[in-house]
Length: 207
Ligand code: UDP
Image (tube, rainbow, N blue to C red; front, side, top):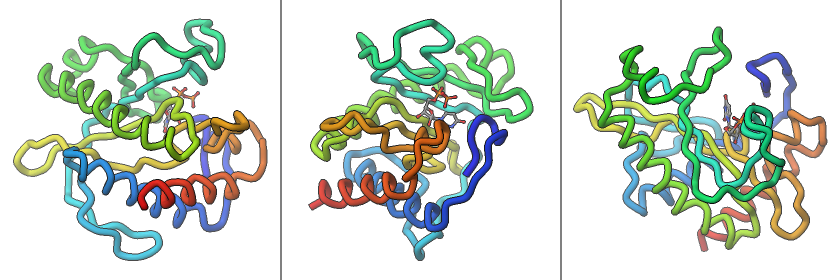
């Protein structure tokens, strides 16, 4: 496990397998709802067969509730429900610490075309509109999450990477408990227990 641009490191045995299961379920749910993804099939506990894509070097962050870097950057109170779904772009570059960018930065650096940026924003909102109610039924408040996209050989934009408690924030609706990587970032303990609970609730929601 890494956080804060790999400054904080740790390990949690079995977390990879949990993330693989969670991500598989969520990608299948999204595919069923018309989102094109790189996933072909899951091979075993920790491996997926995926379509080869060229990753667009933009982290698409979708936010429903203010927390994390948004509260720090803009002084918004932690936990504030946003008046609309906020989509942000971050430039995927570890050496630069993945800085926040706007559309013009992306165009200027030629990392995506204007229509692709529009598509990323639209897909971010669409994915949120599928995931948010799904998690709500599972008793989890989807606070924010990060997506990555890639282009296949025909130039089609596919959802890539993973969607897991490493890349999302979930707060338990009943208790307010954090059920994601913030448990590691903030030394809250019980990281794996939380990931296991997220998987259990997702599997419950699929039935
Ligand atoms: N996120 C991620 N990878 C990153 C940065 C952020 O998966 O390199 C996710 C993070 O888990 C959260 C959302 O994106 O669900 C927004 O993160 P934020 O910008 O608040 O960053 P942080 O506070 O983690 O630095």
